[in-house]
Length: 309
Ligand SMILES: C[S@@+](CC[C@H](N)C(=O)[O-])C[C@H]1O[C@@H](n2cnc3c(N)ncnc32)[C@H](O)[C@@H]1O
Image 1 (tube, rainbow, N blue to C red):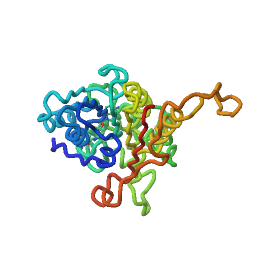
Image 2: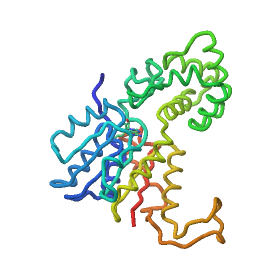
Image 3: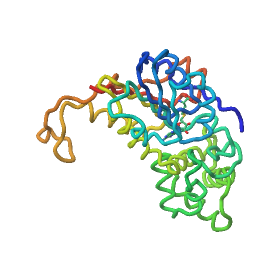
């Protein structure tokens, strides 16, 4: 396997909003290569601590090595961030970071099956203890189920055509590799000068489905929020519009000075209450031009920050 090198996105911005201090307790729900964790641990020295989580054992092993010098100021768990609250007391943390999605080394390692740039097994599991991988979804889901995943999670406009092409191809031969899948998608939807590969949305959608990424975001936001102290901050970096919408809605709900009786937010159904949170800015924070030049993979990153009142 290659070295685990991932350039952390929006690093300065994350440090500014979390403002780590000595003696503070911080959570990194997505440790990855450990870039954000390292910067937080440095900023909260000498006494601050960080509890880190990742679903990927490869990422955690690399991070443990990189962060070994912090000794017992660091605690790592091979676990999804949806489960972070059981390792922390309620209202004990000063800051929680979720940097969603996958890291560059995961994408670049053919064996993990996340990318159509190189040939590998159709895997896409972040946590390799999990049984279900992309090969099952691609070969076993009904045509309509595949089309729905491609449309809802990948924003793929030709989702039905692609799903039909997959079903036709697999009736002759099971699809086992990333290249086989990419070729089927490309045959169904030729590139015709488009900048991105026609399989981009399909691969993103399958990855999100295999890892239940939207379910994780919902559970992770609630878990992260529950462990924050008053004044503590939840910082979330997303790379997908569906995820950003979830974070925005979560923030808006908590920041409202009222609750609503019923499903629809009508003025007559509102009951006043003190807001539970403060949004640091209504607009998401995006990478600077300098960062975009240095790291093109940061282009779709958006950071939202919420402070517990
Ligand atoms: C974008 S990378 C994080 C990079 C990291 N901030 C750094 O500085 O290197 C996302 C990481 O989160 C992990 N991950 C994604 N979803 C997760 C989840 N629900 N629970 C725990 N880890 C998750 C992935 O395995 C990956 O290592």
